[in-house]
Image (tube, rainbow, N blue to C red; front, side, top):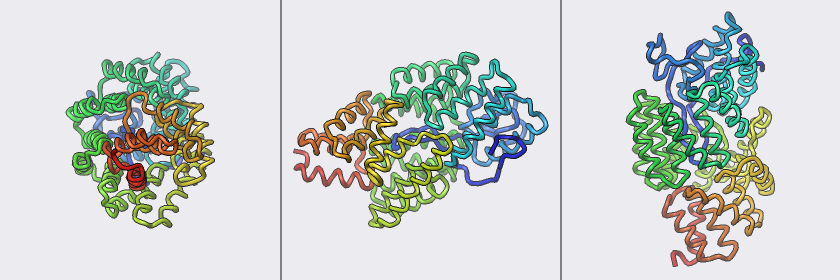
Length: 458
């Protein structure tokens, strides 16, 4: 459907704020703000913004739009563009809103509409249009085309060095391309010229990837200290919960998710995190309840697989298989709308689908980017296809920046076990279970079984 103000659909539906990372531990999620026809009101709830809080679309962080505000904001933009079709900034804002809508609902059919809106903006204003370039960067990142995301973000920054969206997407792109030193420098630079919660959370994630979870927590606590709106508070406390979960501190994780849900009861990232934490504690019924609600409103591969694993741990293989099957449907839809889905395919198919397809997808993704998550996915896909010597090379690469993930350690331990490296396998599996003993309702049990077979912690 073309992204014209006259024809685009605006039917309301639940729109959970979100960011992927998954399994990759990503912590950038949506925050609250109101979208108007030509501007974003940071921390607002509607009505006329005060002068001090108004910012142009070129700088507005659309990942901070609340659920209802996003739908009404798109409608307002469409109404505005019917009477002012030459407003380049509003076309760029509409495109960015479509990207956010696709991201928050898991519906990739909005991406072509976003692309056309950015094209309209660039046609109207070809020079100095950092709003459209930053929007194109966000769209490319959403489609997992990170080289294009980086190019567009840097083009936007040559026009406006303070464009918050471009600064944020630049960090994201460098992270996803595995350029962690450059991402660290980009995060420090962004923090020095445009400090704020979108930059703080990315900075924290880069620190986590570099093996500094304590530093990441310090940055997130600083961010929480500057959070005022319910959306900002939910955003940062959820990030703190995810970090605590990754370190096996489930009590702290649940406290953080509870605070996020207290200030924003429908905040899906917190509900997802709480469900995963219940699963880690073995409270599978509670985990299934939370994750089923997440999947109902946000049916993306990582969430579908998480719910499937909970069902599997409960012994309900039929319902688990149904969840894994839906992943294939989403991947087909995403591909049709320009999304590179090979990493999603590899991660799910290696454990719950076609293993050969998992390896094909992981190799294809590795050709595009050398991130730790791609390296781990390729290592695991190689392992399940019996190529363990090659797999170990990539498992070691995944640990190179210093990032410690229980899932990565489990994968490495199982690869080492398959190669007959018993001592190394025990070390890796013990480390995985010590770091985050409930990292997966199925894989953590497999790790314990394998460790027992290896003679435990000898």
